[in-house]
Length: 374
Image 1: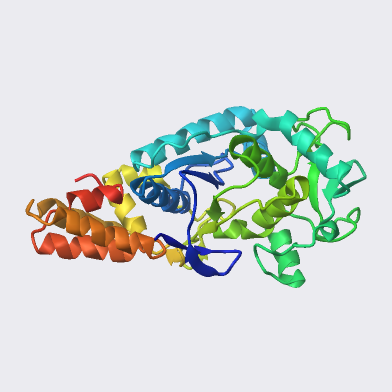
Image 2: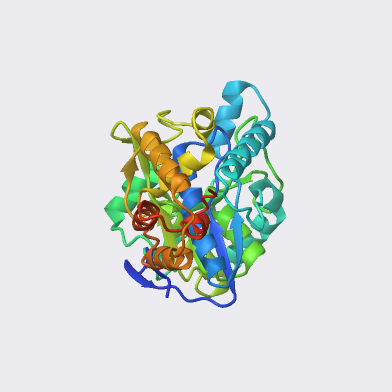
């Protein structure tokens, strides 16, 4: 049985789902190129998808594009281009990079700007149910109305406030009833895109976009929801609160979060500019080498990027390709399956293939399950 660490339950648990697995993964805010952190996140859910398909499931994976948000709008102003032109160009580059890494296509990749009517309806439902309020032209979610607040992250209030301030929130907003209340709809600043609404012209908050898109595409309850570990709070905590406040149903059965990738001791991020771009790596090595370099790390642990990872991955690929096509391919495949079923243990899976290649066994089927075509 496939077992995965569930963030909300804080333990490795059996993953149980019907024939169709509904998976939603947070995509990118497309204002810069795809970096190794993005690749690490995408490859986690790609390997998970491949194993679920191998187990006989149909996987409906939705990966959103946040094409209206503060960082994108700021970058577009800096470059002097329309925000949607910037979003379209960087989304296309992101899709090309993931395709090169042989990430399986998703069922849909909806954009936030394509869901404004749905978002307005969702916010209206929250207000009607008494979970939101208006102040100074902004609509906020009132976290005091949701009894399970904190169910995803389990952080204390001090930690929540610090992370909210660090990750796009504003706990010191004087118009909030509570520092942790979050924006559902906000007035647009001069030069920013705006849509009409019952609460005045403006644009949606970040968190409400994903709840709306996830439920529009996949229904009220997701089997798996994920994204980078830095999204646990506030993004996913807020998603769960507002979604369950509207539907009265569990929003997510299993939270699976990707690791953070660092460079020189600091988390790799667009805001810091310490990025290793996938497109640059693909000019130096085969895409499968990048894939192997990433899969050498377990998704439960943050890790550091170094160029030495490419050398090790290239050597590994040469060993796999040089292995004799002997017998035992099915047995090797089953060993890799067992590794993946133990909380997606990709480092152990790679080690299994290494040992089989050394022994001259057929490693083709096992490598293919990891998305590595030899």
